[in-house]
Length: 397
Image (tube, rainbow, N blue to C red):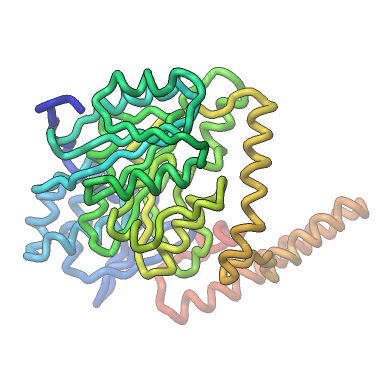
């Protein structure tokens, strides 16, 4: 860490996206997002706040709190973040904390002297309060000069004499860590200077047990690099997300994962018999224990992925081998394929029209879309939702 260097985070603000419509009724405010089509009801007292957030620029949190006239400032911020996760608001900036938690950064490494040097250089440039962090590097029985490289940095080095794999290394470091929060990062990753500053505020919500941040590609030259930037299995999307009961497969990767230390130890840490998929397993067990898992598209780390086709495919194969193991460990998360009636009929008609070269059958597809929209329109009207028929039709299509 940079001793004594701590920049005040950029002011936190919220705004209403242009695509989200706000309609006022006699006893509520309705927010409507066209795609994916969703609606949400708010108390009329939020009218003045929404007006302030609909002017294009981000409205500072302090201004929102003053407009809401509510003494429950923490609950207001949690509600705003929930609206961000649902897509009804946009957010910029970082919440400030009156007291930042002590963070133990854990890095497992084996035979990666160049990678670990770059990784530790990035960690030495983190913007975080002085004396509020430590770095533990676990050398997994390296056979080259990795240990010598690590010893040149002000970190706690734990050296193993036998290769035990990353889950064992992380668990060992967690037991020796002093921090309230464990921050896991891999040796082939670089941390953005604001990595911890942007992710630790998630723990203001006491129900959140762990949080993951954005994983970006370090490389960007080849087609494979550009693919990794948008379709890597380490990318969890571009929106704030929090675990929900209906989203049984939500997880965040261990290369950018912060978790409460006491909870991590209670859960028994990572399963050491899993060499891939151990982060998925931990995230699922954490959710099953009644804690929230959150993803924030901030707190970035840059991953030096395998950018040659052979190693890239080998790693994808490794990920695939974890699937049956995870299914056996989590029987309540069996995967199913769901075919909606309207969509199935539509695509059936479209495929038959192409196979039989009978173009008039495409009209049947149009009738199916219109009929499906009418069925949904009746539900919308019965619930008194202010969604226009053309908006509903486009959503169905």
